[in-house]
Image (cartoon, one colour):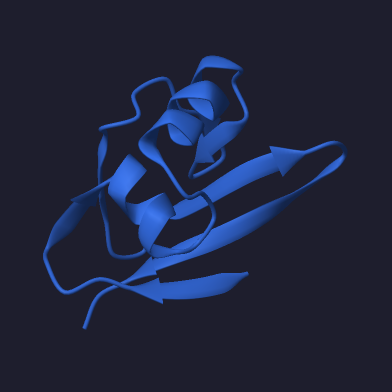
Length: 74
């Protein structure tokens, strides 16, 4: 799991995934969310602009595995 530092109290999911380098565009996030491939703290996330905070874990499903990112505050 990769930790990604944010400089604010919270951040939108789509902005976080771009910051983490998981996606290049917001359109990619929209497609991943629509297909049910994004999980926030183990639950399927349906809102690409959901506010996430330090300690949250975001996972993008890729086949049987996935890439996980933990939000880390300063």
